[in-house]
Amino acid sequence: MRLLGVGKRYGRGPWVLRDLSLDVSGLVVLTGGNGSGKSTLLRIVAGVTCPTEGRVVDRPASVGYVPERFPSDVRMSVRDYLRHMSAIRGASGEVLERLGFRGSMTAPMATLSKGNTQKVALAQAFAATDLLVLDEPFSGLDTAASVALVEMLAERTAVVADHEGHLPSAQVVSLSGAHVTIEFSRASGLGELSDLDGVRSVEPRGTGARVLVEPAHSDTVLAEALRLGCSVRSVRS
Amino acid sequence: MTALVRYLAADVLRGQRFLAPLLVYCGVLGMLFFDDPGPALQAYAGSCALIYPITAWLAVVIATSEDQARREITVVTAGGWRPVLGAVAVLSALFTVVLAVMATLLPVLTNTRPYQVSWVLAGFAAHVVCGFLGTGVGLLFARPVLRSIGHTVLAVFGVVVLTYPLGPRSPLGWVLDMFGADRVSTALVWSGLASVVLVVAAVLLGLRATRRT
Image (cartoon, rainbow over all chains, first blue to last red; front, side, top):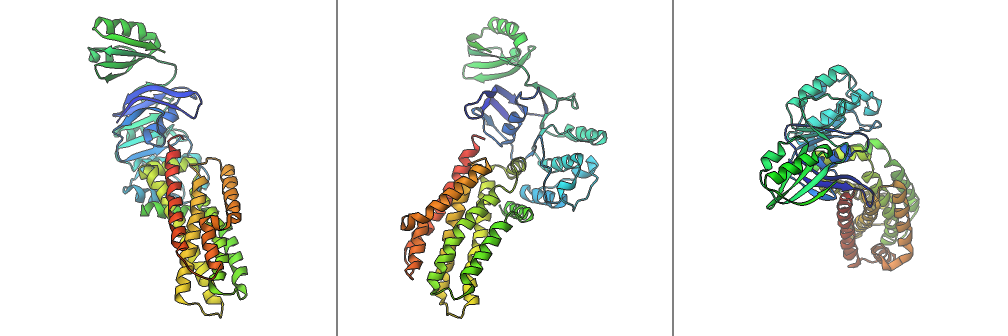
């Protein structure tokens, strides 16, 4: 699954995301402060909302999603909710046990603790077979459940918003701070460019390319691109 | 789709917000048909006028039963907004059929006046049509088209109230006029088509609205 030049704004409001390209494979962790667009990006990845600009290609069929805040007032029981979700998806999972769920399966979910509610939210998502989209999944989990979740995620393709460093081996995409977008009308040596420090993404476009770079590395990347024979069309931050 | 409709139905029934419109419906039906309601088709005109706002109310209840976060999980689980909005429309239609059966059979069971089978069938069809019109209005202004429940209530209430003074200039008025004149005509078919178009348009508008959420 790939995101190509994705941007999002709500109505005529400010841009929440701009020019973001991302290859989703393995485990990807999104970091960034409040309002940096992590949740918006996850909603785009999950298919809940459409990007205002750019596009999402090759979204897999079976996606599991956990929002930042799972509702706490659900009257349905855990057993019924997971049974219905499994029926809709046509799959089932044994996630609750691995996460150490402690609570009644038949009582309304509104009576569960925050941690157990989060485990239910994770359980319904893990029934997906292709891609997991998890917004702050460690929120409310105890240490043992967090460890179990890290182990479970190691086996999966997932995009996770997490600023507590639970997944050190994952590919980290930082949404904090701006980036510099360099567009080339003619590009060569894209492989070398993508290996440079500070390069967030390299997206071929016809004979050219669009490269997103962290501001601190933009001069170096630009100089290297010119050395490789690229022709610059525009640079903007 | 069946699993999705079952889940939404279980959620709506557990949520109990459906009780208020259902109780109002049963109460008014009881008042309409408690005593001799008159000729069959004219009696059905009253319950047809009643089912319209009730199904609009129920459609809003069904469309907003899940809160936004849980709806988004359902959308991802089901593979997109299209099946979820379709399931909401199907469930609303099923509720409408149940209400239509109640309104059609109640006078048959409680009154001594004979009801011809053709009148009962026409009455059932008319209730379904008027119910679908209400469903369409409810879905047209419910989430995701309008995100605020306050705006939804105001819009649905406004349209429902304004429909009655329109008289024979609305699909609902075509049915009420037809039964008021104690006859069955092709107006029922045209109203039925209009109701289906309204429900489909509401679903399509909802799909369009999800692009800007």
